Image 1 (cartoon, rainbow, N blue to C red):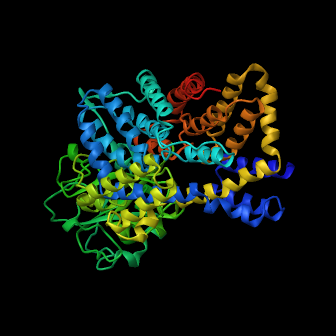
Image 2: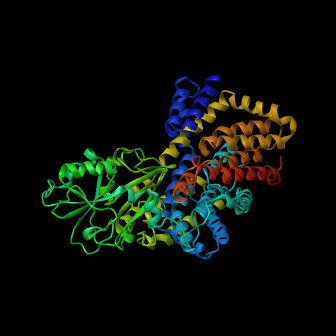
Amino acid sequence: MVLTLTVLALASALFISGKVRSDLVAVGSLIILMLFDILSPSEALSGFSNSIVIMMIGLFVVGGGIFHTGLAKMASGKLLQLAGTNETRLLIMVMLVTAAIGAFVSNTGTVAVMMPIVVSLAMSARTNPGRLLMPLAFASSLGGMLTLIGTPPNLVIQETLMNAGYKGLTFFSFAPIGLVCLVTGIIALLFLRRYLPKNEEKDGNKQFGLSLMELARKYQLSQNLFRIHVGANSAIQSKKLGELDIPAEFELTVIETRHKNSVKNQVLKTINQEIAGPETIIKEDDILYVNGSLERVQQFAQKYGLDILDRQEVESQPPENAEQYATSDVGIAEVMLTPNSGLIGQLVKHSGFREKFRLNILGIHRKEDYILHNLKDHKMRFGDALLVQGTWQSISLLAAEQSNFVVIGQPIEESRKVTMDHKAPIAAGIMLLMVILLVTEFIPAVASVMIAAVLMVAFGCLRNMEEAYKTVNWESIVLIGGMIPMSIAIEKTGAAALLSDGLVSSLGGYGPIALLAGVYFTTSILTLFISNTACAVLFAPIALSAAIGIGASPYPFLFAVSVGASMCFASPFSTPPNALVMSAGRYRFSHYIKVGLPLQIIIGVVMIAVLPLFYPM
């Protein structure tokens, strides 16, 4: 028991620190428990054959089919149009639509699909996107409480109940509790939105969203973009950019080359929609557009006999037009990395970003810092926002890579995203079939989900199995598979009984409501630091033992674990949706404290009051 609790404490500390991947922590804990004979090999590996894990894989694939066919985007876009331009109606409709989608697919995927739509609607309604994006993230978690498959903690408590010999939960057993959470969340946010970023006034006109000029100012393009003229005596004439290795020597990026006789004189406009690359040949009288610090640009110009042009003059354009960073063909956009993006942890120079997408990375927004120089040597992290520049066509192709990116900062000139729209009705039919099978319980739930996943591939909603595998967040799957045996160890060694006895002895004397509150808020606090799945896996057996210890029904206590683990709003990094909207909404940590923490407490108080009404003790 001591060793199990020590492993649990160490794993929790590593989860909280975030310095080691959560799936690696889970597998490491599993190995230790197996090596010390606390768990047999079959017990240690039982998590990976558990129905929860298999269902989660299937749900990721089904969600991928829904997103890839554009079904979620089409449905949500049409529904949100009904809200018009009134901010209150928009906020309510955004939360309702997001919760409805989040009830069936992952909350991260839901937010990834909804973000570009919500930003576009906010700009059309002349509302700051920051007024809507945090409610969007919170609604994705609230919606997860509406169905059995909405969020992993729901599946965890279902498994805990059934393993203990209690009657399992149905597909819509969570609906009453979920509806109370959703209504409470909407009402609370209508009052708490006063703490969200305000709509700003500038030059007599409202400036909303991530416009071209705002992106340029945000990433200080005017301070880091330079034009260099290649004279007749320059040493770099007739050479390829790749031969010069400018990024390594000068920490600069040549993003454009333009002939001097170009008639469309706007900053960042490429010739024949071409972005400067390693094979670009430099010619006499070319103008190079270089991104980097002034000091490095001066060193580059001095070495090769180049002229730095007046930064206030843009090739015969008047000074007031010097900040035009896009045309009908070329533009800039802000892009977020998704939690399972293949680029996370890679250096910019090794990412192949420029070669694959024909786009330049001009800056990285990380938390509250901006990385603008020597980008090639920086590793990309989850939650990073990248400012990219290139043709709208290239940006559109990037937007199609939903498993890796969310394009959030495109202005109105955005190109239409290419999706398999003609497959959307098929995806809708498959999802409906899955829901019917889950509700009727005609076959086991895990079989219903796997059938739907196979049909998504068989009918072309996902192009092939490789694409299906890419939709799965394997870190989450390994985390769940590794943590389920931890709960076995907690019960097997008596640690669950010890911890539950501690809860009962400290709170049980005050009645079952006090114990319920203790279970809920302990889970709610812990989920600020570790994933909701790991939190539910650890607390479910403890809550079950505590309920049995006072002779109460375990149902309200396990529901308290599920809701407490899922309703996490007080930190931007506690859930992927919270992190995804941080940069796009221009939030600071204080916004989550002022809005998310009160919401988390309010929902907790409401749940303590209503759980015994739905599930008597």
